[in-house]
Image (tube, rainbow, N blue to C red):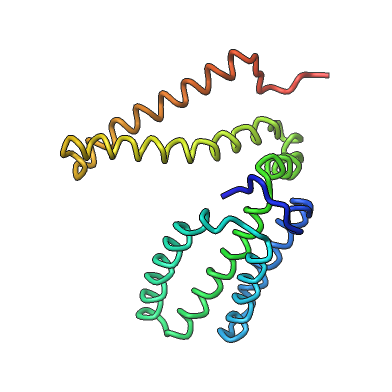
Length: 201
């Protein structure tokens, strides 16, 4: 999930500062073993998310999915270790995700790509192309909603044919559509004269 139009105070902060803070907070969470402290930090993360004026319609399904996964993790860890340890682990993950949502929903896609290109710039010294890596990342991210839309369309079409419970009947058309999307993207890049190689000076 990436911000589209967010005007909160978090949106005005540099992407590098926000992601750097997220990294520090994520590491710090794993140094805390008290569920009481983690509960307070979870409350703080929720308040940060609320203060960022995000569109909570974007968070509805991700939060439901996240809570279901964490419920399974909690039960599994509780059985294998102790319930206190399971609670600590779940609180860490949930708090981290809340902060991550606050960062991603207040950072534009272009700002993320620019930051990633800056981070990857040292790879130029080993023959890599940061611009090419950044483009690959942007295409991968942009493919996610396209693939989701294609999957929903294929599933709906196969459901109408009575084949919704057949994994192969859904997978094959989805793979074909995915390859078609990739081919169209490659043709568009070629038509625009994109050259991934860095020009020699």
